[in-house]
Amino acid sequence: MTLDADGAGAEQFMASMAEPAIAGYLSQPRYHYQLGFIGSMLAGAVAIRDRSHLFHLFVAREFHGCGLGRQLWLAARTAALVAGNTVGFTVNSSDYAFPMYQRWGFLPTGPRVEEGGVAWVPMHLPPCA
Image (tube, rainbow, N blue to C red):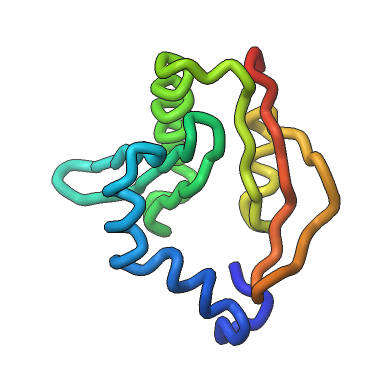
């Protein structure tokens, strides 16, 4: 996730995922979060910003490979399309998630970016994909 294993240089990025930041996102209508539970356990979460940017997608490690990320993505995608998305979706993919997003139809729109202690590849999914 971060360029340096100990997170050095990525403090702003890490702060953007801390509880106060998430509370701030939840208070804004431009962010739409959905949660995934397995039984009573919170197993994942997805967020779409402005009905078009896949902002957060997290799945607890013990549920990786079970299809929960895809289920969360499809639920978020459907909600955004129902809410009026006609432009498709963007995501800033980590190296780890890049193959998953490719399987889901996202295409790179530029080279890998390294900034603020993190790296990502900008990607886009056309609206009818």
